[in-house]
Image (cartoon, rainbow, N blue to C red; front, side, top):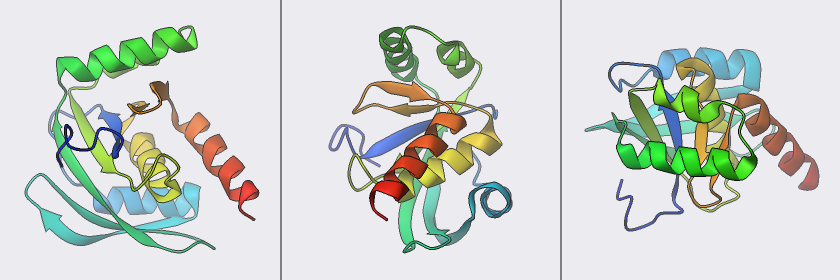
Length: 154
């Protein structure tokens, strides 16, 4: 995924894993159990894959994910986002995460990407960074954003 070519095109999920490995089965179990969402592998890729995201009652779609080692720029963005929000500790949590996953999104309001990022974050035990909005948030906030957007479009 080309970060520089489309800076608004992804969410960053910090992961408390030594290596970025596709954990599709774990993500699917978590998604089905707590998010009413199925996740499946559509196509494996070099550093990730294309995943089918199928929330109950909404149209499914495919989103690409790419895992890599955390970079200093990831932490800088997380610190700036946390500072703008007035603190909270998620920046410190991001520092404990040696890897990140980039979750492709089609727009800033892409609910499938946010749903996938929330499921992944709940398994990987890290926060979610929205570089475009300069926001760092956890699973609870992601769920609230999804619920609010779903009610708005109902």
